[in-house]
Image 1 (cartoon, helix red, strand yellow):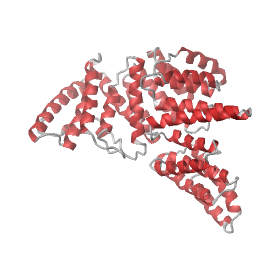
Image 2 (cartoon, rainbow, N blue to C red):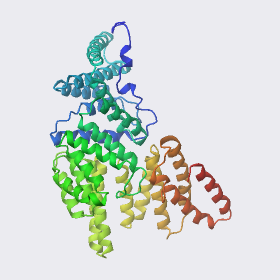
Image 3 (cartoon, helix red, strand yellow):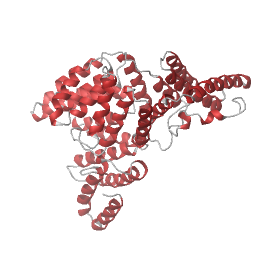
Image 4 (cartoon, rainbow, N blue to C red):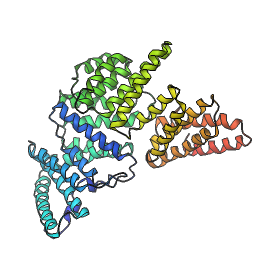
Length: 472
């Protein structure tokens, strides 16, 4: 079997063969914005981490089948070119070959799908790419160290991690395989810790709550720091987790103080740490350093808006209404900056609707809530939160009495919850299914609503039966 007469290359591991598009409901624009921000953070940190893995996935996204994608094979190949350029200077030969394999296989798929150029040009390109792929593939699989396979697993894991909670388990599994084959990569331990933590935190209700697997998450970050003591990304994440433990709070503060305010991602995490400690002025001072960077991330402005919201609440509690109004205006300013950079940032948009309401601009709030509902149907997790928040707003605007439209939204939440449990996350999510979660709150609101209706008892019985099938 020769490379010129067979399609053996179609079985080579690459983004087109990892089933990345199956059951994905994340927003394409958000994924792209997050990747581009991550790329900026890597440049800002001047660290030793290669961005090849990111560039390979970024190129694939330009020709993927995700909703909202307008295929751009030229742009895809430009990202693959950048990845190849970075791979050329890597010291580890097996790492370099793994990235070249994925890049070459991806390029072949792009060539196959988009038929770029004349037949003779395509044939020459294919022959060149197949030859390049075969050389690096045969050299890689011929090694017995396992490093080549480890890097391939990590490339897949990186992509899966960016595609939302329903892909986390597979991403975690692939990082564990990679680490088993090569236990010297700090960024893999850091990524594994993040995945362990994200999945465990789905069972919690607050940012200060302890959770299962916390100790394993901590061990992953500590291992990442052992391998790379300059890894401020892992240091920030370790501090954020330790801060949940009362006896480790000072350790967390000491760690966060060691981080440098250079990379936007570090600044964001550092600001989040101080905000959760309710040290709002310190959080604001740190986060505003990020606004002076050349390309500040959308999330930076969102975090500043959260601090402004907290300061507005503080001022309101003290009955300093002028200061409260000023902070609400600042919150809106930074929410708009976030949304301008990332139009699909769900929580920024939800908080913008809330800000309208807090500022007593109810008509604008209602219009914005309706806009959000129309836009977030592709993400059931976002949809159920938008349904609940809008329903609560409608009830509040009706002097606490639940109007029919709010009741309809509470009922729709049950259907959305069923989609989440049956199609996305069978274990559920604390915000959705836990005590005081969205479904439990919807049931309580509907119970009050049905009490005032003629067929209320029948409707409540039907609701309870429906919820019981979901384990609520």
